[in-house]
Length: 97
Picture 1 (tube, one colour):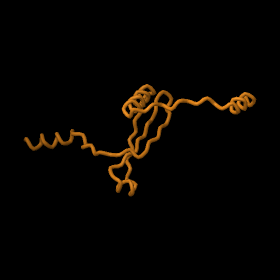
Picture 2 (cartoon, rainbow, N blue to C red):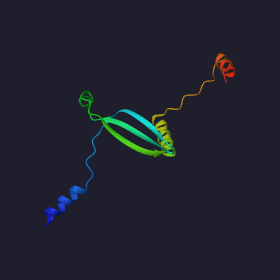
Picture 3 (tube, one colour):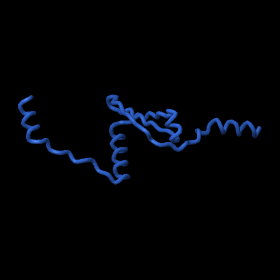
Picture 4 (cartoon, rainbow, N blue to C red):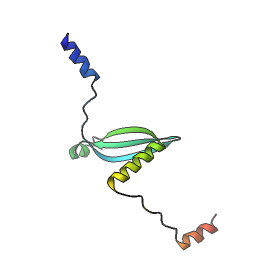
């Protein structure tokens, strides 16, 4: 009887997590949400053999903003400042409306 319980416990266990390295990501807009696809691999050899795992995360814009803020704060980086367009670009855009 105890052997059966051990088998059923293994079925309900999540698979062990393998450490991975992010090698790419893409995103697609879905109206009120964003589909974030993160590509990972477990080693350089796996990458050379094109064994890349894709993980999809569907999140709201607010969740994406919180994730971005967390990553910026964690790495100590800030968003780049937007530069004012040059005088020629402003004049050109004024006449090409």
